[in-house]
Length: 392
Figure (cartoon, one colour):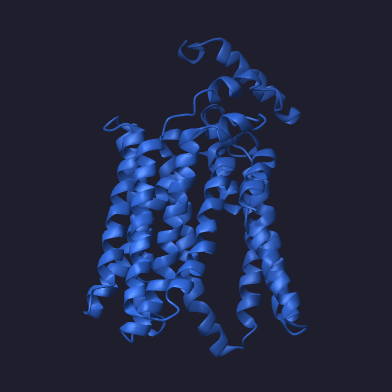
C-alpha cells in the first residue's frame, strides 16, 4: 500500500491520510481479541487490513512535513517523527508483558487500540492540513510552507535515476535492518546459546542508540546544509555510505566472533547506525521533489518492505542445516547488499531537485488550491508578482 498510499497522501494531504490510517488501525486493533476467538482466519484478515491501513503512514508523514516545515529544518522534523516511532517500538516491547501479567492476554490489544483511536482525535484537534488553515498560523508561515497541488508527473519520476537509486538504497537499508532484527538474534541463540529477548534492559539499548543517532544525523544534516558547509548531496551520500560500510563490517565480523559480548556490540552497532542511514532515506524524497515527496517515499518504503519479504525467505532456505558456515554466508550476502546500496547511492543518488520538477510545478501553481483560502492565495500571488514588497 506504500505507493498507492503516497498517491492518496498527495491527493488528499498527509494530515487527512495520517488521521484516517491511525483511526482505522486503532479500531481494527480493538477488534483483534474478539476476532481471534472466532478462528484464525478472521484474525489473519484483520492483521492484513491493519497492514493495509498503516501502509500510507510514512508517505503521509512526509507529505505533512512538506507542507509544514522549512527546507532548512526538514531533516530534523522528519527524524524527530521517526524518533517517535522508535519510542513506540520500545514501549511495544516492554508494556505488553507487564499488562498481561497484571490483567489478561487481550488487554494489550485494547490498550493499544484505545491509544490508536485517541491519537487521531487529539491530532485533528490541535493540527490541520496546512499552516494556512491553522488558527495559530501567520502569513509568514504561509509563505514559507506554501503547499503545491499538482498532478503527479509520472514520467519525470519514473525516468529519474536518483529515484531509482533512492529505491535501491532504501531496499538495501531495509535488508540490513531486517537481518539485524531477526536473523542475528536467531544466530546468537543457536550458536552462542544467548536469547536476547530474555535480557531485559539490554533489549532496548540498540533502539535508544538508534533514536540518538537519528537526532544527531538530522541535526548535523540541517546544520551543514543551512550554513553551506557542504552541498546537500554530499551530506546525504556521506551519511548513507559511511553507515552502510560500518554495517557491512559488523555483519561480516559477527559470524566469526566467539566472544558473545563482541558479537552483541556488532549487533547493537548495526541497529544504531541504521538510525543514520534511515534519516537519509526519510528526508531524501523532500530533496528530489518536495511537492511529490509522499509519492516518492511510497516507492522507497515499498522497496524497503520488499526486502523484509525476501530476506527471511532467503535466509531460512540457506540456513536450513543450521551450520555456522551457512550463517556466515547469509551475513556475507547482507554485507554485500549493504555495499551495493552504497555504490548505487554514490552513482545515482542526489539531494538536488529532479530536473523539470520546478517547471512542472509552477505551471499550475495555484490551479487547485481550496477556494476557502482564496483571499490568502490572492495576497500571495500579489507578493509573488511584486518582489521586495515586504521591504518597503
